Image (tube, rainbow, N blue to C red):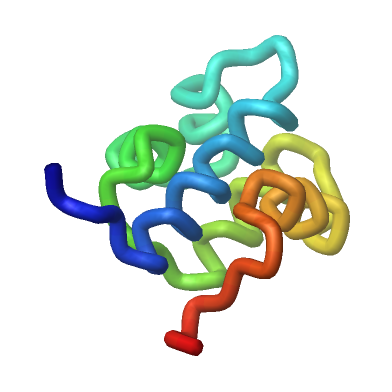
Length: 87
C-alpha cells in the first residue's frame, strides 16, 4: 500500500473540516448560491486535489465559518506534530 504524502494528509484534513462545519444545506446548493463551481466543492470535500487558499476561503465564508476557525478545525484533524516539510 502506498504511503500518503504530507500534502494528501493536509488535503484530507481540509475535507474533514468542511464536512464538520457544513450547515444543513447541501454543499452543492451552497456552491450554486455563492457562485463556486460544484466540481470545486466536490473535489474539496472528497479530498481530490490541492486548492488555492482563496477557494478554501470562499467555501468557509459560504458555510458561514470564519477562516481562522476553519483552519483551527483543520489543525485538529491533522496528526500530532504534523508538518508539510520533512524533518
